[in-house]
Image 1 (cartoon, rainbow, N blue to C red):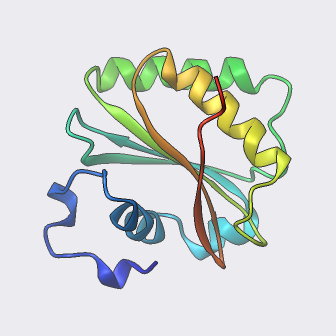
Image 2: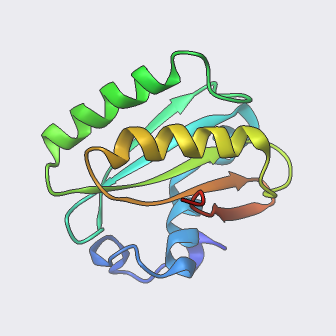
Length: 139
């Protein structure tokens, strides 16, 4: 995983290849965000190409009690601006990229809120040690 691996035309490439997704997240999610904790949402167009990054700093641990209403409001707003779009999300934090309970809780809030409005390409954990896809919850 390294943004040094990105080809020159990376902004025009669809976020469908896992290696490309890891490189794009490496570019967008700063090391500071990984140390301080952040929630990262990359708004994409209908072809899953990056359009606009959104970063919420100071996210540590699991979601707060009002996370669902906050995420739903954000999802509605993003869907109004990019109605045919999709999102790629990441939980930036310290430590190992191995999935924690708090990561699963964030994934559930993100997919529930955004999934009502637009496709979620994936939810990843991004740490100083690397990134990892948090697999979708079992139905």
